[in-house]
Length: 212
Image 1 (tube, one colour):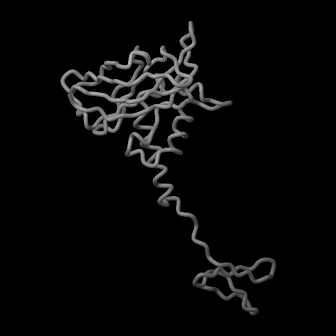
Image 2 (image 1 turned 120 degrees about the vertical axis):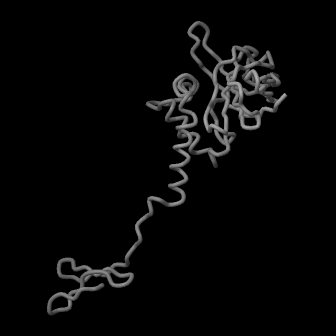
Image 3 (image 1 turned 180 degrees about the horizontal axis):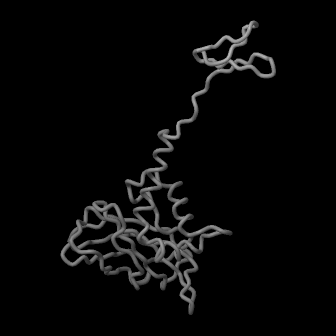
């Protein structure tokens, strides 16, 4: 509501969509603007996406994400921050795990990725085609992470010890899971002789395992 002050009809306050103010004796009229909503749809989505990424992939932050994302870092960047930031940009919905990546790089990937999960033993049998057309090598190491949608988290991850040229790997996973709930991430790493430091990484690829 507008408030009349003084004999000269100075107006202060809000009337409908307008705000009346006095500034150094001059009457100021401003249109009321609704401030940005910190709970807007986009902001709410981003908060949810961030929280999901952190809770889902935190178990592998130190042992896998840190060394694997190291080759991508520039300046003072950190592996975990780079991983989260990259997935915030590319993931349209973290409810779909294949929207996300666990590794990012320019090393040549593989083709025909497939997997079979055996509930009783927890064995995950993975196959691929290891043909080389670019910068890949026969000895590039195969790394795996397994996501379970029923728990909404990574349930197993690690270097399989197998290489590109092997074209198959049996990875020990948690028994008692359901194949249809799983997503397998696979990526390759190239390591420096002697130190074992990861020098090159392929962008992770995904597949959904079947039951035997």
